[in-house]
Length: 232
Image (tube, rainbow, N blue to C red; front, side):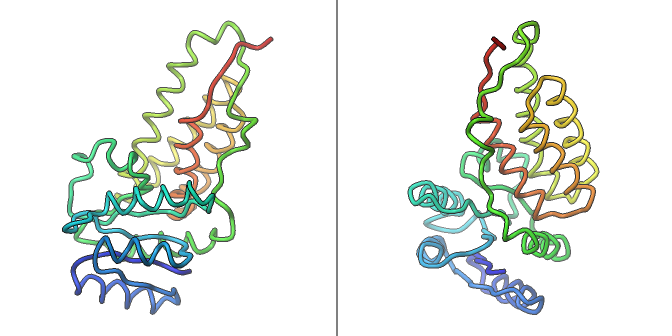
């Protein structure tokens, strides 16, 4: 897998670059946000590992720039994993707003990060695309229309929990959320959402961190796009 690792601390770049290379991955190192943006635009990477607290152009701006370029050019949405000493609880919706898929806290736990990268390598051939546009408008039974907004809001809150859970390697809770999404989506007739919940549960049960990142991104994008109408 081709990895772009961005960190302004030379020792961090050396250590993680060496570890990833030893596991067979091709690693490109960037020393700051400007360097990261230039390198990401010039080559195709499978995953971006991104420090947040860099001077001048920070990781949040790098992530926003990557997502804008992907949208403008219609290219595959690659996973972006934030690596930072920031407390994820203080970031609120900032990670989601920038298009960051997962968060891992410093001091870095190398084992979980390597597991995430290697799980992503196994699924790198699958395109991370949104569900079929035809699935973004769902017909629901008339008697359920009043409570569907609450159902969708609950699922959006579930999705917001996923980056922190993955950072803590709490696969059991991720699997529980996947199970909840799958079951509730089946009740309300949201078939695409049901399938995403199933995929999330399976990935978490298999402790496939990279696949959890991929499905979490799809789940978030689907929940942002989905609309419902009363069944005719």
